[in-house]
Image (cartoon, rainbow, N blue to C red; front, side, top):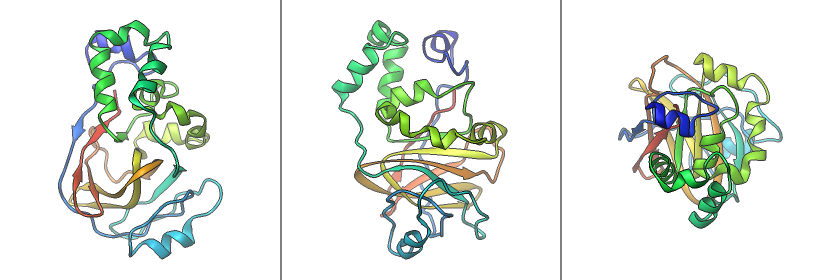
Length: 227
């Protein structure tokens, strides 16, 4: 990222990459996720297992079977809806960190880019709370619900490369597997819902090797939230 973008957007992050968009096309195989909470709607084969595994509170990650990846849905809000584009614009314009800068690039272009995606990946947490990702993505309406995802040592584990994270807007996780040297996440589209998913990394690549597909096999784009 250029110094201009770093200054305009990344007060809490520092300079880095501007976000890599990857859309890979390999289909996922089924798996059994580790314990999770929230009202997750599963696919056929995973339905009964998910129903037994969901419970109250934050579940610790457990070892996963060969092929599948240990994943924790640390936030699940099935009725959440992304704010309207008008509400999003008004919120950002009212914030001193954005304000009139939204009227011109680079901030205008970055805000538009973040708004055009519904799935985000992270391999770094940053120096402080993720202010820019939370606001530019529209998740600011649920910001108070996200802190449980970082109440322990999750930020340190993410920055060490032990954990990666997904934000799923209007999608629900069905499966996550490591195959052919990449993560393959299967998701179910929905009209509502927000999930934050943290999972154990199987690699140490600079760019997360990740493919997102729907339960019908459609490949989806994911934006890297790393800066």
